[in-house]
Amino acid sequence: MNIILIGAPGSGKGTQSRRFIDKYNFVQLSTGDVLRSAIANKTEIGLQAQSYMNQGKLVPDSVMINLVEGFIAAQEGKSVIFDGFPRTVAQAESLNSMLKNRASRIDKVIYFKINPQILTKRLTGRRTCSQCGEIYHIETKPSSKGPLCEKCGGSLVHRPDDREEVINERLAQFEKNTGPTIDFYRKQGNLEEVESDREPEVVFEQIIKILELA
Image 1 (tube, helix red, strand yellow):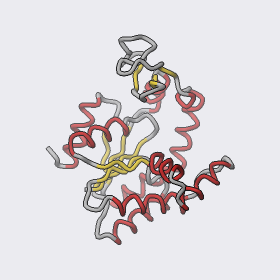
Image 2: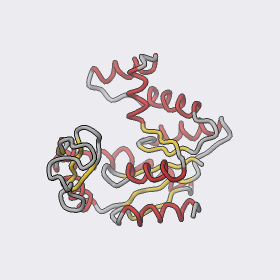
Image 3: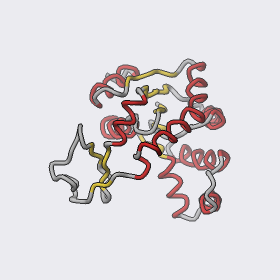
Image 4: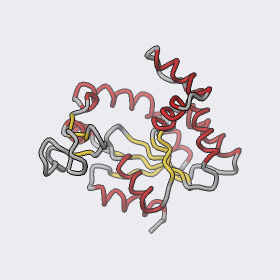
């Protein structure tokens, strides 16, 4: 089974990905992880990507698509969660072609729908462990150790991209770039919506029901 989790930054995709990895042994495609791995291993595609990043430019679709194609080839027979890809219609069309060539397809696209005001409140209150990456929230999930992580004792930080002015720009970019991608999958008939402002357990149950895994 191949599923795509799509939604604005902070809508809960990462939390749900981890749940599916733990319970159903899905493999997660994180474009950030794939990109970092290719750069660290100094592959041809990784070096291409790094050259763009060193110039402060976005890595173009053609390079990202090649990276994703390599990842897919290495996951033959496994269930994959696509998180952070595709972002654009061009990427979505390429992904369809890649999977079709392997006699596969995207089974479901889960759109994490959330009110922008709730999303902004969620992100501005988020605190992230500087060492292990565990996520807390000053209101809904504070650390029992105050400014320190409960798991490893690392310092909790307010990430620069979780500040309100940055969040507004990220949301605007999401609507501009990924809004058409959501419409693309809606027209294909495999897009389902979940109300992601609910508790994570409730969202998880929604997705299980959609995927008929219960």
